[in-house]
Length: 85
Image (cartoon, rainbow, N blue to C red):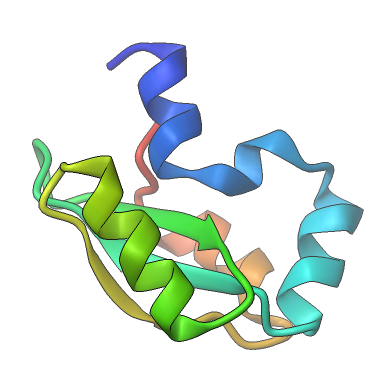
């Protein structure tokens, strides 16, 4: 998978760890389930669940929004879940 594809399906790669934590604490980061090799997950930064769903549909990768990431969840996610990279 190319760097561009990773950026597309994991929007948190565009932010520092502190910025990603702030976005997550504000309820603006949504976890997605992708239909890519190995059942990977991605992230979408959006103002609402409906906006996140619209972004996922527009990507055209069969992505499904799982739900909003909770504050404090990001660190564990990065260690446990295989993101799009």
